[in-house]
Amino acid sequence: MMIIARVCFLSAAFFLSRGFEGRAADSKIEAAPLPDLTLRVSEQTGELEILFQDRRLMLYVFRTNQFKPYVRELFTLSGQNVLRDAPADHLHHHGLMYAIRVNGHNFWEEASQAGREHPVKILTHGTSKTREGLPLAAFTHLIHWITPLDLTAADTARAALLIERRTMTLTLDRPKQEVTLQWHSEFEVGPGARGKAVLTGSNYNGLGLRFPTSLDRVARHQNSENLPYHPRNEQTVIAAKWSAVSGLIDGREVSVALFADPKAIHGTTKFFTMLEPFTYLSVTQSLNESPLEYPAGGSFSVNYLLTIYPGAKDGDFLQQRYGAWVQGIN
Image (cartoon, rainbow, N blue to C red):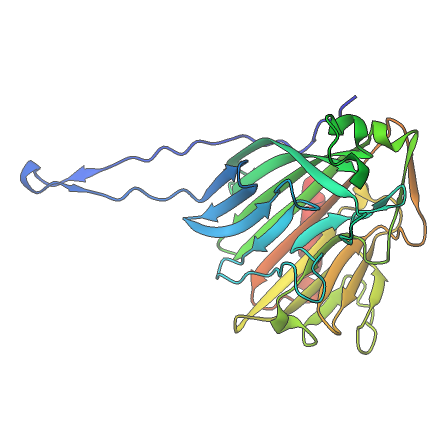
């Protein structure tokens, strides 16, 4: 049975009105206020864009010739893009992306025999408000995880190792200058898994993001447990509730924090970080240590929150923000 995404939202239509003032002889048309958030989808070009008052906040790409759908651009309210896409040193690093290994098929690296997160359809999309009245834009994307042998399959649903319903929810809080992106994916073991799906991966496989070059070697890392990092932070893996990175992007201080939902944890949640030779952050399920196995028809989910801010945020602030998020989703 297909599972239904649990994250629901109400689509909202914005009606622009024109006001007239003064006498008929000198009437003037007032400019209508722009909507807080606008969501635009083009299935033809494989792009979904979320804008704040006509300025891009996020770009999600899902072209059929890609290895995976991912977030290519994500901006602070002051205009800094916190993501880097397909750098020359690792062409398979795509902004903010989710990938692991399934039944031995590699969905992270993009070699000739790599698996594909095949985009099927944007199921729902729209804008609304949160319970607190904050602007919200969300969409749900149907994705079939298939092997390279099944790229030309007439029915990718029958060939899928995993069937994913990925719900992305972006909200903004202008007084706090906060942009948040919740990544909630629900998976069903597909017919192509032939009895079971075994999840494995490297110590960095999971939900990961590559940062702009200005953060390489100089970014500041912190985590919920206040644990130390490797002296050069070439690779550090820490079990924690959240991890954060801060530094200068386009000459302005920016903070990025990644939170894990404790109720959606399968395995041990660990955060992988790097500073040398480039800055990287990912949240993992320790699949390199303990594989996860699901039977035919089984299901599982992941749920993470990314928050970005102009300016530095300390550990106390981020711990409180994590607590508020966890309380809000329980």
